[in-house]
Image (cartoon, rainbow, N blue to C red; front, side):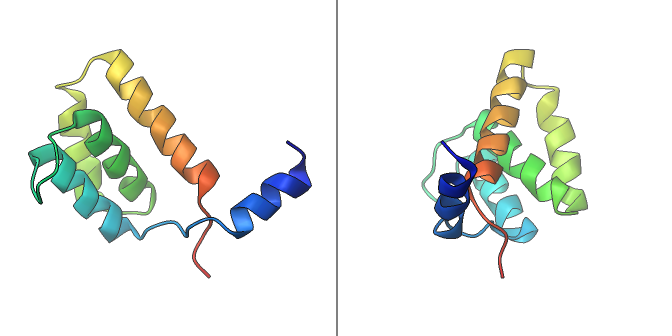
Length: 92
């Protein structure tokens, strides 16, 4: 994929969620609330992304989850977070 094609794809991609929105998604995934499934990898991903946006509560929850996860699960959560960032654009 050329840089031009990649830039065009990002132009039409969804904007990155806010830190608060990501934090709420992390809470939902970590508790299985809102009818969702309990998923530590997804929760870690959202807490990680929220923490990158400055959400201090997300940092604490991410650290807590890390103690319950194996290295492979944390690596997968980090991979998913990188993928999210590579396929979404900043809000205008």
